[in-house]
Image (cartoon, rainbow, N blue to C red; front, side, top):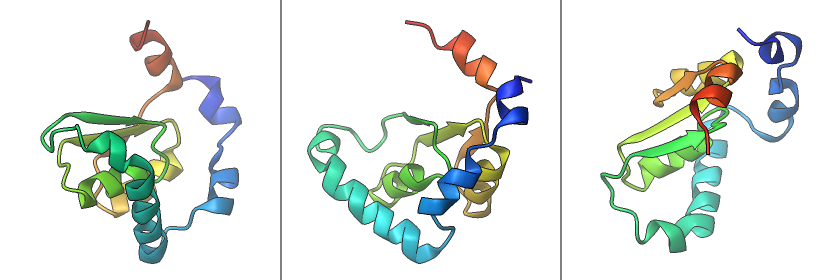
Length: 105
């Protein structure tokens, strides 16, 4: 496992702006709908969507609310993925090295 997740967990900062509450997830879904509506208009509801750096799964949740069911989130923070898992979201923890070496341009 990379030292990135053992020496620094960004959850401390993330938690300042995002709460694990139904109201916050609903508000974020509304925000994402306004932000992404023009883009999502051309995306089929059965498209495979990947949220890299998904945190608690706010975008994954929003996309599911919008009717997208083939959505996956990945993140390096076990704490953030635990929040997503409690909400039943399809998110998984990955080692940063897995991302760096498997996603190449």
